[in-house]
Amino acid sequence: MVDVAGLGVDFLDVRVGDILTMKKKHPCGENRFLVLRSGMDFRIRCMKCDREVMVPRLRCEKNIKAITRPEPSPKA
Ligand SMILES: [Zn+2]
Figure 1 (cartoon, helix red, strand yellow):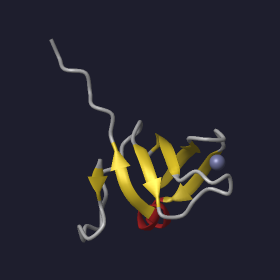
Figure 2 (cartoon, helix red, strand yellow; figure 1 turned 180 degrees about the horizontal axis):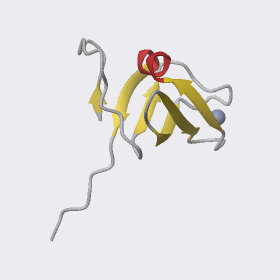
Figure 3 (cartoon, protein in one colour; figure 1 turned 135 degrees about the horizontal axis):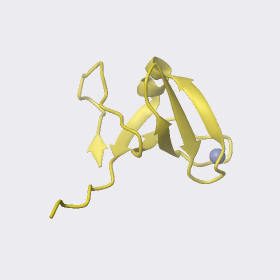
């Protein structure tokens, strides 16, 4: 879990597979979203209702509270 509040960065390292905790909740009440696509726009999926949304990167980054990245399995 990376707390992005107060980091002061203008570019967030968001990757496919990351889970974003957003400041703004989805209408269904969930505030965690899975990243399906990264780029100029993010495609994210609500963790609760499975709805997918496209969000412009800049707008999305402003809304991110935290990034959770699943630990990659260690290489043998
Ligand atoms: Zn939802």
